[in-house]
Amino acid sequence: ETNHNLLQLNAVYSSAYPSLPDLQSQADDTPAPAIAPGDPLSDDHFVAAKLQHTKRKHLHETGLATVAEVIASKKRKTQVLIEISNQQPVGPDAIANNLNNLIGTVTNLVNTVNTNH
Image (tube, rainbow, N blue to C red; front, side):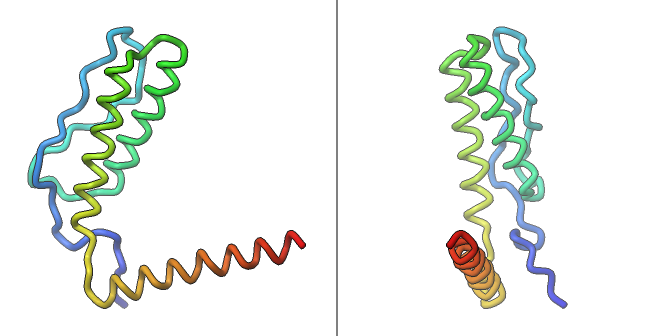
């Protein structure tokens, strides 16, 4: 059985994504770990960057994060996502897997619509 992992085997980051500096307010923004070139790609890195950005947006609402700090976390989250997305496999297995995911999503949607009527 082939493992249909989202990321190619041995795929690595081509760029460095250092951890963001602490917030000026010293509030905890759930920092995402630094990524070095050559580190294995991981969906966990995107999850961590997304979590940090979400936390910074909430902290900004209460004045504990600046606009620039929120922009920095958004930029880092986007960069990590783009790097991971660029490494998606495009072979027949990946295409079949994506189609199966799409069929599953459509099936769930149809079931939801039918349940609500």
